[in-house]
Image (cartoon, rainbow, N blue to C red; front, top):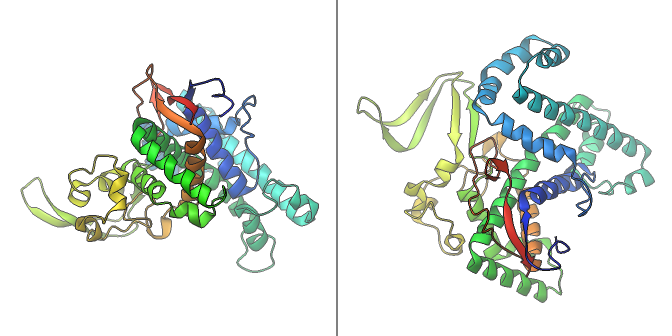
Length: 386
């Protein structure tokens, strides 16, 4: 990107690069493959582009209803081959987008799994020639749970599903977090300057090479990260289904349609529940009257007593962005490392400012949030060398 700005400030669609960078981070660190060279003159990985369109399609009301009620019943009755044949008969552009995205994801995952497995069986140079040198999550999974002779080994079908899950779940959410952070520091130049000064000073004290521990400990960078994920979680809601009858306690009483005050709700087995992550993260009852404002400085002072006493069950930092329990986001530490590395490098070398021609950037509701301008996925910003 420094090459693009070598001749002065220019407007750049950051959503294009955010997707590419996020995909490559997942490729290198999680599955051990280079998925995008990130070269200026190279074409982006088609999977990244298809994935973006797939997420948009999956976020439509029709797709949500199908995923919640129709597809699970069809999948439980028929074979995968029959389901593919059935989908090919549906004359819907929406179905075609999702179908192509899912099938490409499945085909790529199976190919990469076989390549990874063959490299492990060969060992030696075959592993050292990989971009990750064999030091990635999927290599560890295959080595420890697939290529073993014990009762609890993971079969190849399940291992391949982990490939799919990592690519599907990690790429778009981290891309959303990266792009939102860049937009916010572009809109808050004073915060951008403070952040740049903190990172440059820390690098100078470390002779230009910040360790992982020192990077994560930078107070303002950490505050920017926490505040962005509090106010703008990449996934604004999550769907769940009650597996048994349960009584759900409420943090704050609510008033029923008959005027009755309720401090708990009875949730019958099989009830579909949509939980608003952004709603609880922005609760004024918890975070105070400025809960809707982006203010990283709130994390540099003691948090309000209402936050400390809220008993928020989030796995990370009293917010629900990464959920909690058995189904919390397993990659929340990886996302933290990814975003802090990227922001620290970009802010040191580049300066960001809002586009005057495309000032209104919208983030419509969806499975994950992505920036749009005039109905198209885009996030144009003015970028120059810092």
